[in-house]
Length: 251
Length: 247
Image 1 (cartoon, chains in turn red, cyan):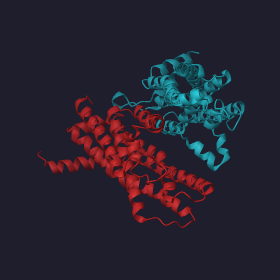
Image 2 (image 1 turned 180 degrees about the vertical axis):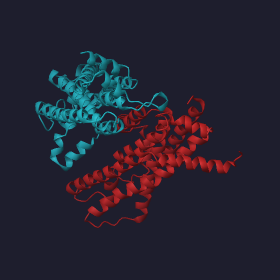
Image 3 (image 1 turned 45 degrees about the horizontal axis):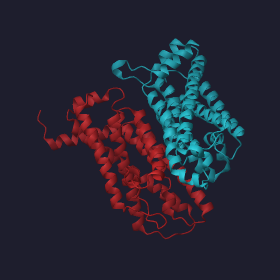
Image 4 (image 1 turned 45 degrees about the vertical axis):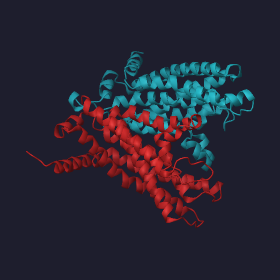
């Protein structure tokens, strides 16, 4: 049967999206992330109200949980690719879609499409909560707010895609989880202290400039656009490496 | 005893366990080395405020390896094999061989404890020697009581991970929660800003065993962490005893 190539891509894309949406673990992860993020934001707002007596901006409080929030999205990315390898689903997938490069890129694309709205909702809910809890009616520029929210969403999406690529490279959930969480939560915060010169070129530090409001206290070396660029470059490199390995390797 | 040997052999043959050993042995000295190098100038000038924690920060963060060990010990039993090799769980085989669930659990916990004690001793040896190598005569004195605290902290953390994984049966959740919570700025540390009760959480109470000027004395810290471990293991034991294997 001859199928036109645009039709082919649409149906591959539909299949990948369908597989993602029907993974029960993904929904559990997302709901848990949403709830935990709200709890964390509540804790941050509470302590900010107590200590600094309202000197910190609402946006900072609402986004203070970003460091922990990204863990949920790392898990999401790993689950998306590693679920193929638990129980040999990958062989069914490759039987129906024998174009490996296409298959993995559409997987990342559908993951991105799924992540963007979810990340936006979760980030926005955190900021909204912090906004509601603050009694001081602080005037926030809508423009800055939207820019920050979009930046945070973009950062979370890039992190998810990066984790998915690493998951596709390592093919097992536990090592991928250990490597990524270990990097994001141990290695990276430590390297910020010990290697201050090159820290800006790591994917997470560069990415964090995407949503960090420019403050005078810290020296923001990168603009948000530079941060986005570096972070995107890392993600693309890892996706490319993952695709190259995926095409060469025995499934 | 035979169940214990079997558990040891199962643990050593897990592919992921080598990652745990690798992290457990090399991460603490590496972090301690980086920290010593960063602090060296201050220490020699005599103005460092963190002299007493230099090596211990590596040991506090190196607990990652032990978390992996505790989680994998249980989650590997519940991993469903691929449908091509029967789609079974290892746990059904294990419980066929050792039919008493209590014995099975005790043997497994014993194996985890023994390995984590050994691993922590190795980590302490490498970390202390690396710190001494870099700082030379300025190296802090590693008190024996604090080092015993580190061994206790590692073992208790391994057992906590073990207990949580029995309850969840899936490795992802405990691994994520525990790794994040042993990171540089932990969630429980943030919680202490909200409520003083957070000082009674197992990781903070446990780290008082070897970090100076903590909220608790080292002895109370160890008691609190031990109470957490004991309660968790008892709950896990009851749940494991009553749960259907297939569910």
